[in-house]
Image (cartoon, rainbow, N blue to C red):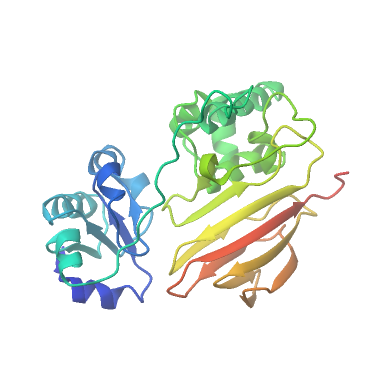
Length: 306
């Protein structure tokens, strides 16, 4: 484990490094380093391998003590390039370096604002849909876990509604079941009439490292609605996607930042305003090599879907 000064870490930000803030959520709201993701120390200790999907990781806390503890945990699970910010966010601020201020949490809606039928939480929603689809096919948890390439323990936790799986895990499960991604997100009752999706109360799916997220912009209960998503990528991040069902196409437009898209053996460089339509039934990757966030909108089209 190597200690970094704020100046040392600032220079490292131009590289592909995973910045993990191990403070508590209330501390995170006071500001965090650019490109960082929040994994409280207790959560990291409970599942270090799941919380640290890749190497070259920098841990940050308020003053440096907890980040050194987290670095020790990372070394114990085989991470080789491990760093800790000496002096933590206090030293970073004192050096006059930039902090990102998260959006303040939205106040609870008043009785007149509250929806008559609030959406269920994502963990319960995905769990119920997974159970229904697995049962309909007569598959055991072990059989589906082998087909999807995920652990039986994780699959069981998802089905029981005890955890929201990452985007990658949901894709693997959907592929194994032979259903669209949206099937595992669909509400039991379809929405009719006009619907509004508020950003402040949106439910997002994230990647395992927290540097890529997806927000559905369509009524999840409407089986005939076009699958429309808002995608976000942190600076210096990458998201690899397995091949989707045969005939699947993605229509994507970059609205902020820059994106490198690889499809099979080809690479495409897109800037704000550029759009691409491609066959997603082959492995593809989204890469943000810039120091700025990248925002995109995506529409999924499946073969034979009307």
